[in-house]
Length: 407
Picture: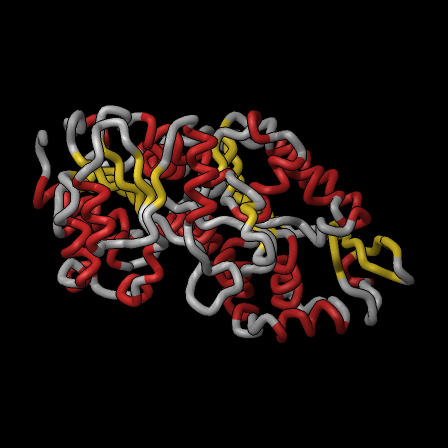
């Protein structure tokens, strides 16, 4: 890693500003946080700063969304998880926020208001430009060191993610460091063979990942499932029925069919597709060879025979990167593929989950302890796996060049 970490700076007695990602599912009617996994992941970083004045920056949702709200409930949840007081300030960089930080003492934790309440934070800007925003200038004057621990927003180029590192000494938090180390291992020292399992409905992301890891030799096999598989079926000229074909159009992925065909033409020996599918017919589950899919029935899961073949492939893999479910797992009749493959993947030497729905299912099944790494950032994880330089990581590196060294 070309950026600094908490081990590289002296934080004792300092005012440390920490950017976290507490963005979580919320019940808009009661403002109740429904899942605090992201909170739990940031606890070690905040605890590591117990001898500092800690000022936490976070966001919840974005303008226009029903769950775009204050961070009052987040402060209460964080307080419970840290088992220590957390002061919530309904201000970001005004007089109230500055005075609260100034009067704080080492060991205090302050959570400032939702940074996206500031219009500037909702802009996508060049990092060099965002350092001159009001939010960056004001916040950077309130602390000695900035710690970016928000891997979940590492793919965003916004002032508190990429602007603050250009205005003050910045290092990665423990979660950010863990994410980068584990995801980097996929490309460097992962046990062979390496199998990527790409599914769900984010077809463009999955195809980008498949193309990258096959082109650079990272993946030995790429197992395609979910709606992504439907696009590959179309690329092979297979009739998948009207409902499934229409879903591709509705999601706007018709242009991805040509990309899938190019991947198939180039790496046919490394792409694995289910040959049997499960459809919803007369309200229940029925299985067919994919080429015999009924014209009026939607494909909602893999067929049992293909589940067995894929499970064997995963059990024989040294490394598995799993991103996206195999079907409509929310319906019990069509959860089999997702559940069975996740159980099989858990047996590999090194297993990584790309976050999102897949991570939620892994927790639901009680498999989390068996996985090497569950990423906290769906979008950030995918972009990392496509070989893109995440804006937050680039800013961390450049900040270390500008302000690096012992603090």
